[in-house]
Length: 503
Ligand code: NAD
Ligand code: 6OD
Image 1 (cartoon, protein in one colour):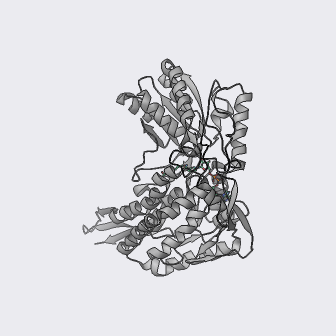
Image 2: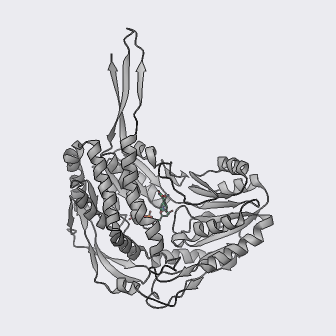
């Protein structure tokens, strides 16, 4: 791990005037009626960079009311072709203000600009474009049926929007994950009320301006800020005017939201936690496996739900793999998020760092061999008060250790040897989660055989986080409910009505 001695332009972010984040309701920025605000902190510096208004029930009521009115108004009547054009303009609007989104996302998360420039912001725009294309091209189903009079009947299905959709988001990929849900929701003709994470209010707020500039009718896109329980998140998901809830975040939060959704029998789509395995076979291309595993463990400082936290390596290559993974981790450069040489940022907050550090301590207590890392990362000014942490690799723990069973969501993994394909599949599947998995092998036969047996919604062979947005995305077991992506998103964001026409 390298730490940059030079501390340059991030100071500009830290010393800039405090931004104020208001709710975006009915096409306008509004302050909270309670007058309550909370601090928005840049995790790279630990400094407050903004104040965020906290929504009470009153703002949630106004946002849901605005969304319902939008459905009754111009948006509800808009022709599909016009809606598609509007969504293209939203995508263009994000691209036109690319640098503003980039600044805002990196200030909220501390992530390297190089990462957000290539992943978060372009995907924010693509999420509108792709779902505009999907809705434009989706066919419907029709059945010609026989009837006793010989004249027959024609059945055809019509898709209609669900209504007002609550979109509750996490902090790790704020714009990417929010638009991944707002894009298809709007493409299908719904109106949304978004609750961004309390840690990352900026890009959801900025998107309100883009929506207005793109000609999205007021009330279609609303944002309320605040926390989860007894705050905006709970007020929103409990609101009877919400027709469906789409949520990305922790499994425990999903459980609470599902209880709220039960009242009124509202539909849910959940992308939740993971404890994802990597299976590295002796017949892999070692260079590819190392490069991919370094990314899947450490990208975004390990704060990716799809990231690898358990690595299983076939015994003949175990020692070499661990040595090369260690070298890869130690090459990561922590430093100014603006510096193109920086490859790893901080964790999202001191609170999250405390949680990750508790696992670092626990691993040592349980007798793990600390291959590299294991502690906070000491950083020079102005990053000294940021939530930096060392990339960490362990070996030597058993499969039933909490390090191997609980989601840590930090830049760390445990590497274990294995001897037998069937046995490693069993061990990798022995978890309550089922989100993602990577398989590293040059044998196509093995790749198919193993992929077929993995209990995970997403299986990458010789790659990681390679995304085609037309494909089904989601988790098995406690990693989620439902699939989004391509036409699968339409299943959640629309209701289908069957029309039976007697001929
Ligand atoms: P979180 O569950 O703590 O919070 C997510 C959102 O839910 C926030 O906006 C929060 O304010 C809100 N919230 C919290 N309690 C709520 C409640 N009772 N009612 C309504 N809203 C509530 O998750 P996080 O810490 O922001 O994100 C990290 C977690 O998200 C990790 O577990 C990670 O695996 C998961 N995640 C999953 C995916 C996926 O695609 N499966 C993607 C990203 C993150
Ligand atoms: O790429 C996506 O569509 C997606 N939902 C990614 C999730 C990443 C989790 O942190």
